[in-house]
Image (tube, rainbow, N blue to C red; front, side, top):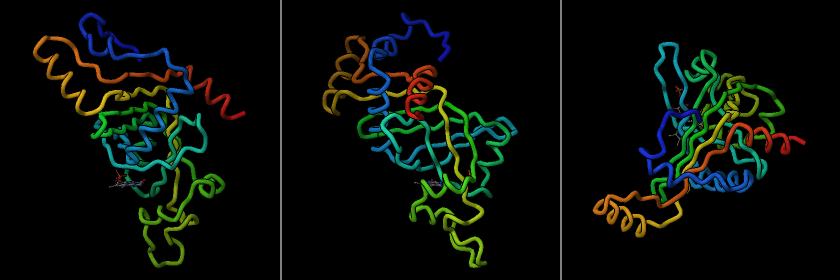
Length: 204
Ligand SMILES: Cc1cc2nc3c(=O)[nH]c(=O)nc-3n(C[C@H](O)[C@H](O)[C@H](O)COP(=O)(O)O)c2cc1C
C-alpha cells in the first residue's frame, strides 16, 4: 500500500507490522479469520462516487493458497450496476470477539459461467433468490439471475490477534497510563507480488 504515513508518528502500525511471515503462512492465517467471521462486507462504488457496502458470505476456499473470494448474488441487484461502473471493490471481515480483521482490495469479476456456478453452488444459496413460480426463476443453479462475483485481490491487509481478551485489556490499560502503544497482534500485508506468485503456483 502506498502511504505517506511516517513510522515515528504512527508507532502502533510500526510495532504491529510483521512482514517476515511466508506468503503461505499468511494465507493460512487469513483463511482462519475469514472462516471465523463467515460474513464479509462487500463495498462497491456507485456512479455518484458514494460507496455502498452490504453483507455477503463467500464460498469456502478450494485450496490452501486461494486468495480470491467467490460470492453468489442476484444479477438483478444494485451491486452489479456499481461493479460495472467501477470494478474496484473492497471486502472486509471483522471478528469482534478476537479483534482480528481482514481487508481485501481488488477487482470484481462478474461471471455467469455454468461450470463455475455448478462448481461452487450449494442449496443454501437459494435463499438469496427465491422461487418466483414462473418455471424459470426457481432460485436454483439454473436460474438466469444467478451470478458469481469473484473478487481478485491486488492487496490484502489483515490484523491477527495474538493475545486473548484479558491480556489485551491489561496491556491497553497499562499503556493508556504509561503512554506506551498496545500491540496485541500482528498487522500483515499480502502484497500484489505475493498474490501473483501464490496464485501462479495455485493455477498450475
Ligand atoms: C448475513 C448475510 C449474508 C448475506 N450474504 C449474501 C450473499 O452471499 N449474496 C447475496 O447476494 N446477498 C447476500 N446477503 C444480502 C445482501 O447483504 C444484500 O442485502 C443484497 O445482496 C442486496 O444488495 P444490493 O442491493 O446492495 O445489491 C446477505 C445478507 C446477510 C444479512
